[in-house]
Image (cartoon, rainbow over all chains, first blue to last red):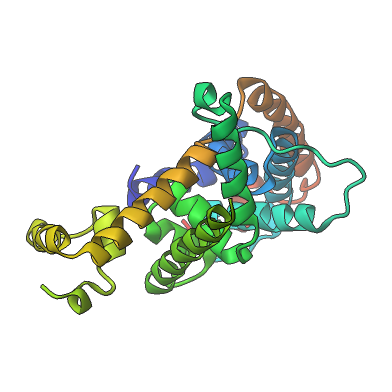
Length: 183
Length: 96
């Protein structure tokens, strides 16, 4: 859906939710679950953590919904909660380290040792970037959200978001070039 | 078109966000400028590696089913904790 269509549909669901329609809550969940989960999966690197964080984000969003007085669309608020939860999770000391999953796609190719090594290099290079650069690369270049939507979600102007994206691409390229120069 | 004219346009070129006539001008420049051609190719390769390493993620049906049940309970809790206000009198937390 284009942003205006998404906004209108989401607004109708929120209105129904306000009037006590539980189906509207389910519909809002279905509407946004893959985006929230996809972001969390890529940032956290494994399914278990991504599911926990996604669950918590939705539960917090709906539990606090009655107190929320923001002006942003629901999904921006929801995504902000998910983003903070991901960052908190990454900063937590872990007793057990969950190994990162293989790439979600390209399952066949990921079985090849050289593809696995390449994926590990890319993930390591990404992890070395600042958080905002990781976010914009995941959202724009992996999940392929529109720059305008990402700008709204990150609370930046469109120009600032594009500028961040372009810097992030070059930073990732520089990291990979450095890693692959050594081998 | 000179190299300096392409500054700031190469990402738009890689993203396919340029008008056809500008894109055609860059195409012609890339045929005779190895530096700019390398810049474009390396940006495209970096993005391709990124997409391959991460892929696109979708939540599983099992997760969505489990969450649907949890959200249903949450909805009942939220409604139950606000008995004083009729649903249509609650202040809407989101802009419509």
